[in-house]
Amino acid sequence: MIKFQKKVDIKISMIRWYLFIVFSLFIFQFSTAQQSGYLKFEFNTDSAHLVLDNDVMGVMKIASGDSIRLPIGTHVVEVYTPFDVRYLEFPNVSSGTTTIVRYLFQSNNVSSESLYANYAAAEYWNANYAMQTDSDTDIYFDGEFKGTGFAFLDFKPGVNTIEFKNPYHKTSYVKIKYRNNKPLTLNEYFVKPIRKLAYSASLVPGASQIYKKQYTKGTLIFSGTSLFAYLWFRNNKKYSLENRDFINLTLRYNSATTESEALRLGDLVDKQHKILTTLDNKRQVYLSITMISYIYNIIDAFISKPNGGYYEAKPLNFYFSNQLTENGFIPRATLQMSFKP
Image (cartoon, rainbow, N blue to C red; front, side, top):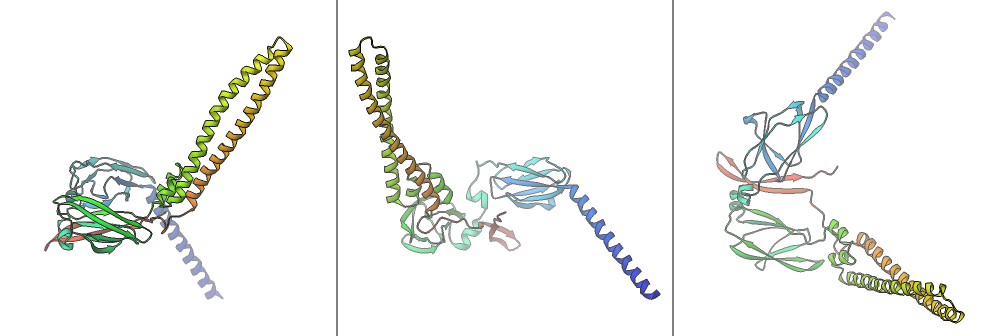
């Protein structure tokens, strides 16, 4: 019985020590979190080089939108790119908060060469242009099939023509003027309609449908809405003129001094009232049809999808560059993944 009691006491003691350690770690972590904050960087480029607190040996490359956890207090932040001067600032990091630091690099010297420094990538792929489209589009260059959705192209100085063939849309051509630059550049060409643009275009009757290649529907919506809006405007203008005459006749009728004049003006007032009633009914009908057509235009813009669907942004973006090693420059492709909250 005594041995059993000792075992129980030992277990209780161990549980107490365990709870004490867990609680201490929680307090330590909480106090540490309260003694730090975040710096979030936003650039007008995809990335930049960063030096923190004058640590020149710890240069890092940070993407636009990334955050870094730092102790509270004022820090020395230096950012730069290959094509602009170094920017030096002293942001203050507060406890448990995020401080946003924005840098807009000058674009005077921006080029594919200075931005990506990608001569090696161009030599490696034997190309100076990378074309990215949606996943359904075939890419032709000088009549030769180059790929579906993505292709490397070797442009010559002057105007170059690219042909896009999509099963859901008509064949389209893009002419790109290329100069004698070696670096590899990336261009995106979207054949499928973009959802946000289709929604925004619904403000103009039929524009969203035409943007989504629904030409017949878009033309009918635009023509119908415009026609009835014009008829409403014309009848509303007539109604205003006839209503002015009706008011004048009513005033003359009320101020008539003889019975014969009152009878004559009374007939004119009744006749004018019938004209007003007819015009008012017409303009109400035209206005109702215009509103119904416009509301249908907006509903259809949000509900109907284009043939082949909308363009869906890829979660991966990539950038070409080169990297200096002991064996010289080697090509590099950087992938950036976008995580949705």
